[in-house]
Image (tube, rainbow, N blue to C red):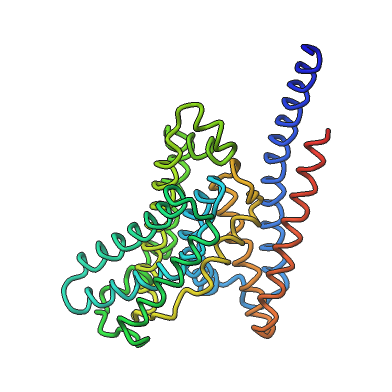
Amino acid sequence: MTAVLNGNSDLARRRRIGITRLVRHSQFALLAILVLAFVLASLLVPYFLTWGNLSNLLQRNSIIGIVSCGMLLMIILGGFDLSVGAVGAMSSVAAAALVAGVSIPLGIVAALALGLAVGLLNGFCIAKVGITPFVATLGVEVLVTGLLFIATSAEPIYGVPESFTTIGLGKIAFLPIPTLIFAAIALATWALLRFTTFGHYVFMVGGNKDAARLAGVNVDRVTLVTYGLGGLYAGLAGVVLLGTTGIGQPASATDWPLSAIAAVVVGGVPLSGGVGSVGRVVLGTFLLGIIANILNLTGISPYWQPAITGVVILVAVGVDSYQRKRAGRD
């Protein structure tokens, strides 16, 4: 019996080592693919390697990158959030109304507070009520969207002062401000996961919730905080979106949930939880962004773009899953 247990332990250890090596190597492979796509686009696609286009690429993808950092936390935890688009639209509209009618600081604070509140509601439904992440976040998404349409009659909110658009359209030196915000959020998320006890708890809960609970981790609290952060990030992205468009649009950000999940999974982060890194999300975000930018510059119909993006996602996830299975068998 002891020999069998030791054999199983050695097998598990070898599998963990194999998967760890795979994660490290696949991240280098993803970086190589991103560099190759950039070089090929620079050589073959007209106007790609112009600062106007590159600045636009950074600006547009930084918004979804902020959302993706929050999605990463929830996916590592073993869940995800389908309400981030509704949260972004709600935060954008609330900020627009307050920025236009009261003050800019109040509008930003209110948008962030609303995002945090909806995230905590998601976490409560999942942790305390026991609803699955898919059903809980889908229900919250429908609820938030319905309330937002009722409150605004589905009409956009205008009157945002031009000075506010600096958040979305301004630059510091040569970098767009949304890119700097994305960089700050990515760095903060990396530090949270790498250096804090809470970050280690997120990995533990995502790897094995029951084992984490037996180890003394307050799983419900970790879930609440994680989804709260996801909502907060989506609220911040809504503020940046408002700074980009200057209009609080209730019907905006509908593609955020799938785009954020796509950025995470293309980065090689499994939906099973317990594994992931911010660097992968950054690479996945900009790889998808470069692909979309190439399609736009080459005049390919926008109807083809989701299909091509879907193929990229399926290939990336399929290859990663196959490699993980092989690493687990070795």
